[in-house]
Length: 219
Image (cartoon, rainbow, N blue to C red; front, side):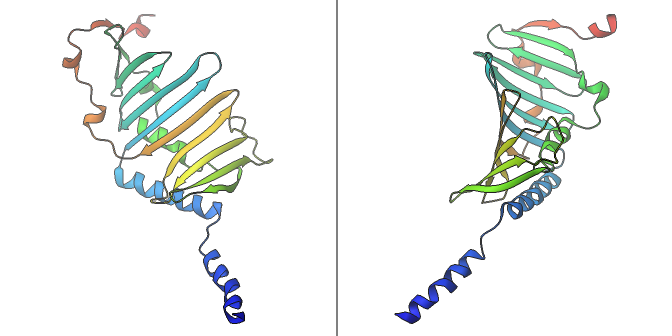
C-alpha cells in the first residue's frame, strides 16, 4: 500500500503537465483564427447582441464576403434585413414591406473589405489584459480578461469574458461592457458562401421602394 500511495504524487504531476495556462490557450486560439481566416479567404460570419439602457437589446447576424455583406437585425420587435455590395445598400423592413435603397457609405473610405475589417476585431483582442482561466468544462475554457494598469486605450473595457472551444481552439463567445453598453459576440465562423451575401431583387417585387441613391450628391 505504501508503494501505491507513493505513486499518487507522481501520477498527479503527470496529469498536471497536460494542463494549459490561459496564455497558452489564447496563443493557440490566435493561431487557429489565423489559419481559418487564411483558408477561408475573404469571408467572416458572426452574431452579436448589444444591450443598451432603456432601448433594450439589438440582436444581429452578419455574413460578410469580400465587399458584400448581409445582416439580419432585430430590435424592439422590429426586423431589418440589409444587403450591400460595396456600392449599393438595400434595407428591407418586413413589417412595412418597404425596401430602401441607398449608396453604400462605406465604399468612399473603406480600406478593406467588410469581412476583413470585422474579423480584425479578433486580432490581439486580449492584448493589454491579464488573463486567467475561470472555469473549464468538457467542451470549453472560460477565460477572464482584466485590463492592465498600463493599458491606456479608453475604448478597451475593464473586463472581458472569453469562451474558447476545446475542439478547435476557436472563440465561442466574447462578452464585455463599456459605458453601460453590453456586448456579446458569438458563433464566429469563416464559412460564408456567395449566396449568403447576394441580394435578389425579385424577392421583393411587391415591396414599396424608396430610392435614396445620389441624395448626398444633391445636397
